[in-house]
Length: 195
Image (cartoon, rainbow, N blue to C red):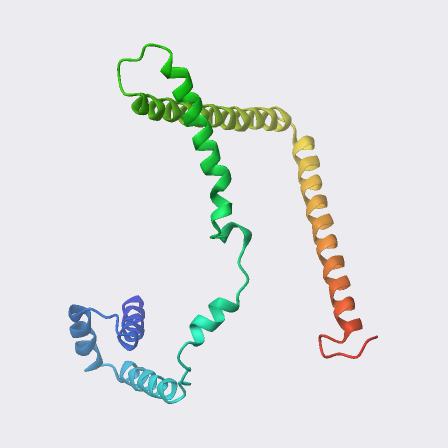
């Protein structure tokens, strides 16, 4: 019976135009012997015809208008000023690296030394951040391990605490949602009469 399920999936894939030639041949051999699958294929073809007939034409430029009407999120800002802080930071770090290496009797190119210094700064910052993150998670793991180690009472208390926090968040969410609905109702924006 599971094999028959595979044929039903193949029928769906064929209707979507995603069936490989080899699977299409297998499906055709099966359809020659299975009237139920042949009927399902006819129903899928009728559904495809209905959907094609119901297709609504969309005016040109509609997609562009919709996308243009969407508000930009702050992190999506493409304004040059949004990059100013990052560029300024790189320039300050590069200038500092140049100042440090220019008086030290460096035999290689000062520009190369600047890039090396900035790279080393970013690399050490990344390593320090990763180390702090790792230490934080290990510390949290040790604390939780000690808390729950062999004590069913501590585990139950923690479970009650988590459920309580979840209930508090749910209550706040519902309260906020209720206030928004009341405000919208008072302004008549949701189509209902103010109560």
